[in-house]
Length: 207
Image (tube, rainbow, N blue to C red; front, top):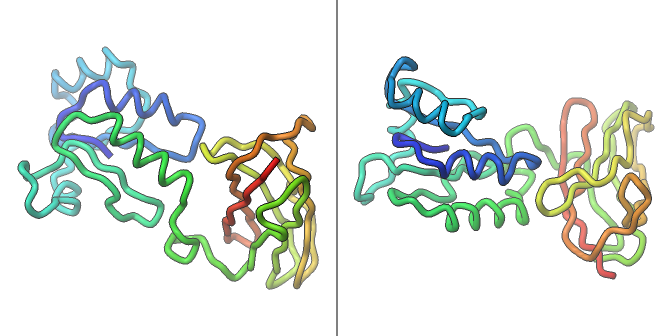
């Protein structure tokens, strides 16, 4: 989140993380007809959403002891907690926090809508060159299972709406992307969706 004063930082962050799950949201405690806001939106070709008259939101995230009643920039983690706030222009610090959150998502049990009941895990982990991703379904149904790299980019559709039985299931991944190319060593995230719920687990590929 950003505000109450806009700069090129918000657009830069939006562009840098446009292919990840990072969402940039502008906060502006004024009307949409504010001429200064319109100049900024036009100059930087803003495409991320901007919420108007958002004093109540500022109050929610006001930080005790800060030099300004409302920090200019926030990073809110996957569980809705303030991970970073600053009254100064510091794009490097903001990007560093976002990168850290992408590498180490909040625990599944802390994220609304993500549940651990699917028992998603990979064995072996770390692995080279192949691992098996295990999950348990409370009932038979369709499953989607994707692999993302540490930046959040989708690299492999492992399961695309396939039907699976109730109970334990397993799917193998050989460390390749959708084009069959071997991926380099690194951290990856497996994300499963089934029955209206989701779960995420980390995978470490060592070449």
